[in-house]
Amino acid sequence: MATEAAPGEETGGLVFHPLDQFIVKPLFNPEGAVHWYTITNVTLWLALAVVAIVALFVLGTRGRAMVPSRSQSIGEVLYGFTYKMVEDVAGKDAIKFFPYIMTLFMFILFSNYLGLIPASFATTSHIAVTGVLALAVFLTVTIVGFVKNGVGFLGLFWVSSAPLVLRPILAIIELISYFVRPVSHSIRLGGNIMAGHAVMKVFAGFAAVAAISPFAVLSITAIYGLEMLVAGVQAYVFTILTCVYLKDALHPSH
Image (cartoon, rainbow, N blue to C red; front, side):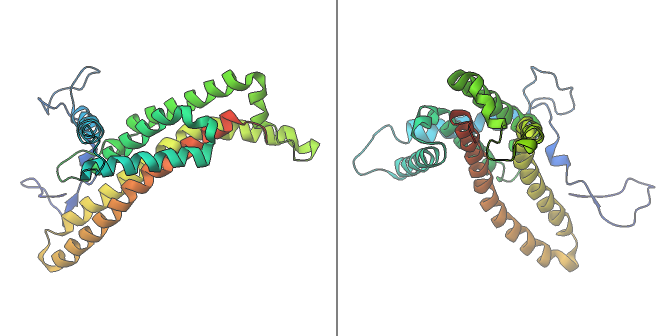
């Protein structure tokens, strides 16, 4: 946002602080310290995402009518879309993990869209949030891989189709890339959400300048529309990558 200079302070123009919107603050005492037990703005919007999901899938579909209501139709579409994604990408034997993947997809999707409400907080812009989600996926697929395949899970890192002399080198590369998964998985989501919100905040600051205000407002509108698309796409990308990782755990051989 644009800010005015303090009295006596020289300034050459507008000053923007587009990253201030990502600051974690106590909900009831904005100037206080943040501890592990502190209820913050992040806590509030994470809780609202859970409430919104429960409202749609529990309250909105409780009637289970033959002619579905609008909320029931949305719930059924999201359910069918996610189920088909898991089945197509990870295979039929991955269906037992559908509740976890469905929960993951819904949580990210609702968090992304709630973060687009004016004066809200984009929880998925924080690596602390996306990192936990990505680490949970990493640990889940790793445990599943070893439980289902035992030592055979290590076949994921051994490229048997490559020339024998290259296989040890490729194994090291595959091993490194495997442990980098939670990093790339979390940064991809958090970085895209943060970038979009920061750009909108910059243009919102330019809207205070009368000469370029119309252009800034049009730009904000266009970027907001793009962010509506990005919010859905990033939830989908995170979830489909989870399905790919799950497939590797269930079928590790190259």
